[in-house]
Image (cartoon, rainbow, N blue to C red; front, side):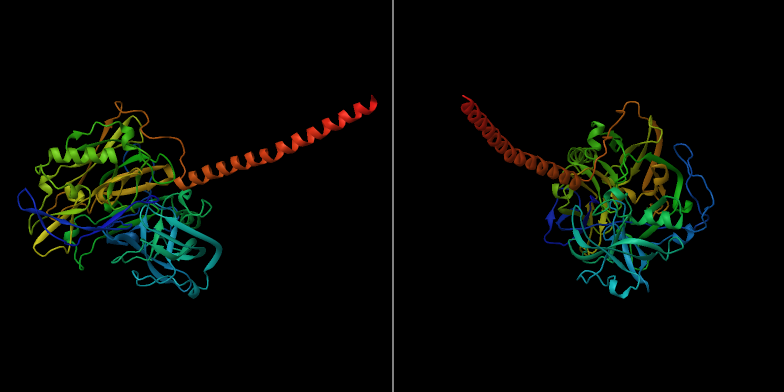
Length: 508
């Protein structure tokens, strides 16, 4: 999030509009803001930790600590991209079970500590004999939604995670607005980004940092989100995924892992070199893609693009799509496009590709998603229609690779070697066996600028504003002091001059 950015869309049929094309119509929809995420798994075999192996590939090794069993973490996530991907945790003594949203775009571990109409239960700090308040308030504002509470510490364990219990910094949420939403089944958020994003400041050690330090697991985690094709989800076969803490599980991906450097350690910031719609290069200056920043954020539902890039993508899709006249409401997220039951729109849309700089900086690789990942089915709209939303949106604060793209890949957050890995997800496959994502490379990046993103360390916006205000206050204070001191000096100087004149007069 941006902290982390996200949009949750729930469709309500207000009226129907006839379209100029084929058998589809548009349904206006109301947009509900929120944070959301993803994952799933297959038959596991062995545990692995990551070792450097050139630009691609994952080498197998036994876990040196003995505390990590990756097989126990397969399918430990529940949820989908519309309502969020969450993991079960136990907090306090005795343990209280809560579901926690997985978010790589923020750094605070926060849990509801008071009743809220949209959640079923909360962490009652008074019932935990090991909870300890640290006497500090904390507030976090996301692109949409915010909460306030107090900082404390308590024991936390993950039933389907590394063995052991860890003392963790916890933000006890006491009030919120637009954060908990109707229909979600989680009661808190797990921020997995770097300390720089922690609130109220970076001295609040994030959850995963504490886990690595206390349990001695490798400073790596991986995330597989399996919500692609929501229309096929049933209560008996829910979407979900896997958050593997300490490494990567090889049965959750196919082929090699391709790595891109982490440009700055706050968000997981990467460098995007170009975008393609079908086989068409957008031909924008690569700095356009990294305007402000480009990050990988599981807490953001959509693929969010800077305004100029978003407009170029929509124009390119419109040119290459079989649907030439399409409602603008579909592109801006205010309308769903609906077909009669059994019809699917994916044949009308091209693939989307993102080129990332490789760890060998003279090369790049390409991650590609099929239309099934960005033209997303919405359930429970109308019994006679299949409706879809556009999985991209414009952004005023940078490019965000959210769940729309991440659902196609097993993403490896290799913090130890400051790189992010992408591999084809084993669950990103359609019901008829078609892979919904692709990876290709390496490609030469010689024709791309040596640096497409700023290397200047940028702190979060609120910090910058705070420092600027402090500087203004200091300047005003200096001016006031000068205004006070200078008249005194002039008055004092005048008194000396008068006394000297008097002495001279007496001498005469």
